[in-house]
Length: 225
Image (cartoon, rainbow, N blue to C red):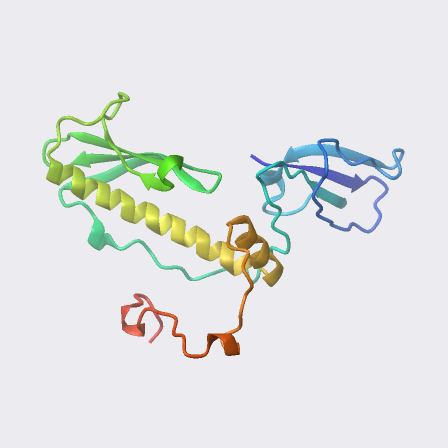
């Protein structure tokens, strides 16, 4: 979990917020040691709202990390696409999940129970760096080994169910991230993703004669109208 350095005003002055990348591992020095204090806390501690009398915020950016500035909350609500139950595994019920986001990648396990005989199938969820993709191994419910009491057809159906749910989770998180990002944030996100290319407007003459593929309106489920 990323940590941030906080500096707050103990004298009740008007708070201000700043974000900056630190060039080394040392915390910033307060301008007035007798009036200010510095603390290092997880960034999740201020995700909902800033601390009272917060004066400055410093983010420690290490090698391989990138600072994304300019994020906003907007109106605080967003319409997203729900999971499509058409991908549910027939005869199986998702009854539990132990999931987290590890640096943005879903990680953990999803537990399915067969409706007729009570068999349990655990589907692992993990990011596999060598091939840069999510993997969903069908596992024994309590042992670190592959499942052995399910047919290939059953495994394929349950894994597709798990993939569809996790795919929705990733899409919703990405949509929220895009919604709260400003132009400055979008530029930083693209650069951190290795996509820091020049951004062209749709009417740029260099795009003349080119057509970018977009899904037809009829295929966008949940669209208004």
